[in-house]
Length: 200
Image (tube, rainbow, N blue to C red; front, side, top):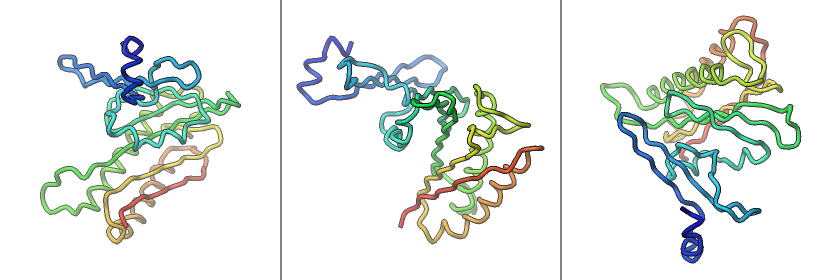
């Protein structure tokens, strides 16, 4: 369809087109097509399949430019998992996981910071379990995978909290993350990178 209207799209400066498919009693499905810079053909942008176009820019997909990525299906729509193999070294395989924790509507007297920390911990646990189910070649021990052959677990948490509210919650979250990592029996220690982005 995009090829059919290629000239009109080009004239109006359209570089990506998203199709939304609605099926009864199923989640919405999104397919985004873009113009391939080399072939000049319209092709699906696989890395953002089933992701709302307005949220796709938050996934920082430029980080995956050195890998061939394959989206992995998950039951939790808040979690996006990609299995990646290096373009230069196919033996370099890893999982990339991205999740966004929205503030949502908080009921009762719970603080926003406490809610976001608890929600982040729950999603982290779901992401690790999803990686186990989608494991395709990365070494795995016990319940949780090491996620990549070089034994690194990058974790980026995007928060809408002001910095003064995020700081007191950070030690608790990191301590709980350490507890999750060591809960797996016989899981060798591996370096972890935790990066928080907050409003300043």
